[in-house]
Length: 346
Image (cartoon, rainbow, N blue to C red; front, side, top):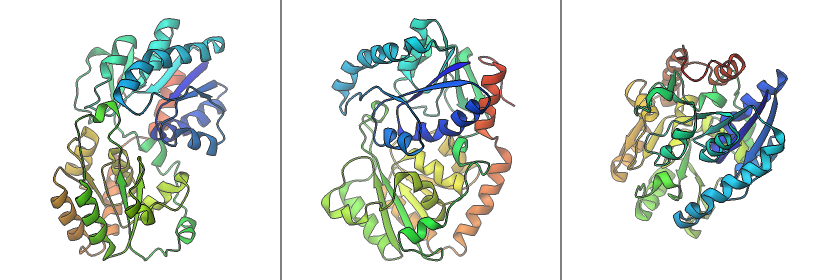
């Protein structure tokens, strides 16, 4: 089978990387297309993937809207000679549009209910796959599976944390350190949403700095006053760092979920929410969500007073892992057996 895997965000690289390696072992051909979004292309390079770079949608809404049909056209021209049998993407409307033009199947994965672009892909595909906790009903094309996107790459079958990352930044396993994530709020589905104010960011860094080292990862350029906290390692090692972190707090929903499946206490600060995060909070107690930055900072400081905090979270993580599936293995099985679009995942 010839499969096109479309990448439009760094998280998509992680979501699909194990699938690509596993499906190729089974003799299938994979062509990767990618757009320039943050460090997506750098991640593809770091994993040794060959791919077709389609360029960028742009940083602002007007530019994105202008580039929508142009990126569709670029993808169409780039993959037409490959003669694919199947397209796979994560909320990829260009994969949906191109597959529709070529009269080929396209299956989409999505875990973001507030995504405003769902209508851009749903009419053009036979199947969309969402976590079982996904709150939105997408109709007869929808299939739910009992997992999280982050388990496609952070399940213990695929991920083993490397303690060498701590030596690289001159920390021991017993030292406290905190990962903070700021987002750019430039994605279409983030329009009108918000997280920390600049004053809140300053206070958060100051308060956490009393207890340990602060490390910041940010989608957008950091103000000069925060530069000294910038993450000092390769982005490919962020999950090793996140596993050993004392606490994660930030505006990034994906990283919040990554922290929870790794057993690191997580605080998500945003005006948005998602079914995945709500389940991780209410069912497993692995995460806390806040709209108010002051309440979030207070919770972070309260957690730091908890005895054996990381040990408690690792126990909660084990409970969660027993409930959930190996998402990559499930996707490989799904593709090989061609059980889409209307079979439910068990």
